[in-house]
Image 1 (tube, rainbow, N blue to C red):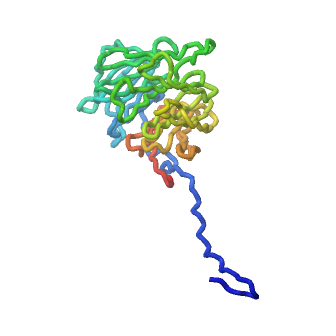
Image 2: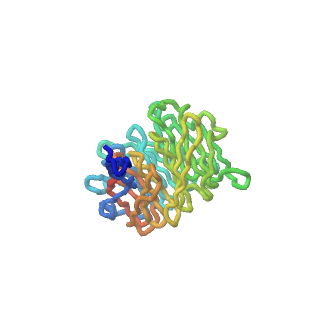
Image 3: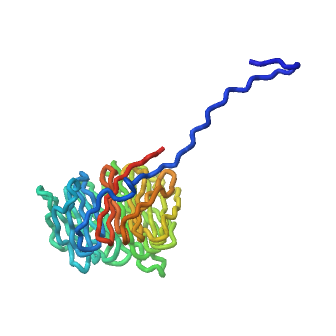
Amino acid sequence: HADVVRGWCVRAAPASRPPAPKRTSPTMHVGSGAPSHVLRGCDAAVQCACFDPTGGFLVSGDQQGDVAVWRMRTRRVLDTKTACDAQEGVLQVRSAPGETWISQGRWGTIHVWRWRTDETLERIDDGALRAGSGFCKLATSGWERHVHVAWPGEVSGTVDVWDLDGRIKTCSFDGGSSRTDGGAGMCMSLQWMERAHDRDVAQRRLLGTYEDGSVRIWDTRKANEPVACERWHEEAVVASDYEPKKGIVATGSATGELVLARWNHAEAKLVHPVKLKVGDEGIADLAIRPDHKVVAVGSWNGKVHFCALKRPQVLCSATYHTSTVNSVCYSPDGKVLASTSNDRTIALWSLYNAVEK
C-alpha cells in the first residue's frame, strides 16, 4: 500500500528477506583426532597395504620381505608369507579379479597369490615374472576375464603390461630413460584409468607419472606415443590416483604439491588443473575416497592430510606416525583409511564428514 504525506506518495518498504545461507566449507573429522586402532607386530617398516574387496581383511607388505593378512574384525594377523628377500622388501601388494593377489619387491620380484578358503594366501606362480627395480608400484586391472598388470619395465623409463593368465606381455610404453635427452626419466607411479563400460583391452588407458614432473596418459593401442602429456610439477611426481566416475586425476610431488585435474574422455586430454600445497615435505602416496569427495595424502613427515576435491583445500591433518607414511588406502566403503609407515605400524582412521555440500 502507499501513504500520502504532504503530497508525496510514500510506498511501504518491502518486507525484509532472510539473509542467504552462508556457504559452509566441508569439514573433515577423523574420529577423535587419533587412530581408531593401530596394528602392531610388524618387524620392519610397513611399505604398503590393500583392503580386500569385502573390506574384512587387509594385506600388508613390509621392508623385510613379508606379506601379512590382517582380519579387520579382530585386528589380528591371520597369515604371514615370505614374498621376497629381506634385503629387497615388499614394495607393493594389490588385489586382482578372481581372488588373486600380486606382490612386488623393490628389485622387481613378482609373485602371484591365491586367496584360500581358510583365509590365507597360497603362492601360485613359477617365479619367472620380473619387473624393473625402483620405487614405482604396480597397478592391477581385470577385463575380458583376465588379470592385467602394469609395472615398470626392466629398461629404465619403460612400462610393461602383462596378461597374468596367459603369462604374456601385451604391450610396452617408453617414456625415455634419460632426462638430458628429452626423456621423462624413471616412471614413478601407475594407475589404470578404467570405466565401468570399458570391456576391451583396446579401450584401456594407463596413467603414468615421471621423474621429470610430467603426467602421461598411455593408450594400449598406441604404445609409441602418449595420448596426453602435461607437466604441472617441477619435481618428480611420486604418487597418483584416478577416480573413474568423475574422471578425477590426483598427482603428488616430492615438493609436497598436490595437483587435481579432470580427464576429458571425449577429447582425450587433461583439463582444469588446480594446484594445492600440502604440508612442507614431500608426498609419499595418495588415495581418492570411493565417494570421490576427499583425497588422503601421506607425507614424508609422518602426517596424513585430507583434502576436499570439489573446492580444493586441506580439510585437516592427522598426526600419529613418527616416520614417513609410505602408503594410504581406503576400505571399499570409504569409512576407514589405513596408513602404513616406517615406524612399523599400520594406523586405522575412522572417517566421517560434518558438512559436505
